[in-house]
Amino acid sequence: MKYIGYKKVEGIIEVVTGLHIGGSTAIIEIGGKDNPVIKHPVTREPYIPGSSLKGKMRSLLEWKHGLINSANPGSREFGEVHQCDRKDCPVCVVFGSSAEKSSSGPTRLIVRDAVICADYKEKQKEKDINWIPLDITEDKYENTINRITAKANPRNFERVVSGVEFSFEMIFRIFDMPANGKDGFDNGKQDEELFMEVLEGLRLVESDALGGAGSRGSGQVKFFVKLPDSDDNKTLDEITTETFNTIPTAKI
Image 1 (tube, rainbow, N blue to C red):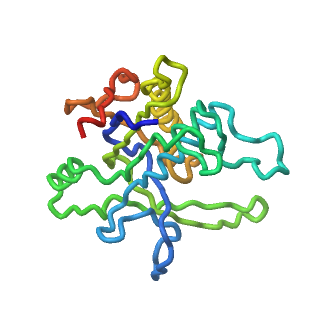
Image 2: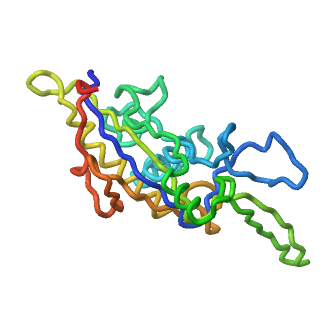
């Protein structure tokens, strides 16, 4: 096995409806929010953790491929993250598996934290010189209503407002894996084929929701992917696996 190359997927995540990815409530303030969004500990700017995006992609792909154990409610695996030792599993190879079950080498997909896009910040500053990144959140209030007494039980949580743009980056690693070829290796063929799962995962997130309260209107996002060696951004419908070249590690 040898690390021979990688594909880079980068671009913009546009928040279409308010986004809530929860942060710590360890510090309780008078009048503070019950459920704040996650923020950088120094700048206090909201961001999208790579683990949140990667986890959502994995979950949706597990459902798509029928890999969720939903048949045995009493088992330890019921509803848990899918993990197996198949060397061609489209989920475990791309997103990783436990050390005990991993037989396909290192996790292929690396997802960076997505931070507020620099261009978005500049545009907001042009509109309002006093604008600061802390201005991109809102308080969302909801009520649960008792069906008999009509008593309301209010709750609130923080959301990143619609229209905010985050810069994202993913690295998909290509490994030369043992195979039945003439030299005993596949020259990255399996990983090249599995790269389609990354783009499919992004499409599934677009059609679903990212973060919390997705079934109640939050978390709709749209991806705009930067073309390699260009400043042009395209929607997921405008790109294919052929859009992305494999960058040899020899050039690093």
